[in-house]
Image 1 (cartoon, rainbow, N blue to C red):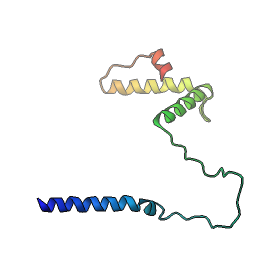
Image 2 (cartoon, rainbow, N blue to C red):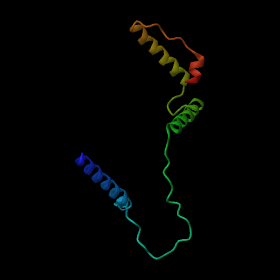
Image 3 (cartoon, rainbow, N blue to C red):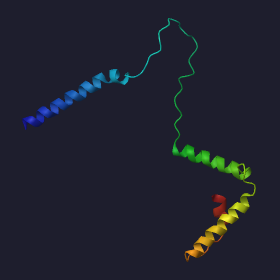
Length: 113
């Protein structure tokens, strides 16, 4: 039992030491700019926080791109409805080969997609 108490005390001391030295360790590898003695009055704009994209941001960006593409298709695609129809036909051909019933067009689903 005394061994467990000694081990717990040792671990607590190591943790306390690590927390106490954390500010020192966190600066390792950071190179401070040289002190030139010049004081700059204007705030620096180069120190901006990085932009973090959430999954919601990515989905919104994709939605905006998709809306733009339906209004103006990407370069090289001129007949978007013909491409959709061809994909539908090819999908049904593969479904028939595998013994599945063909898909039926669904306008609501197409608008949603």
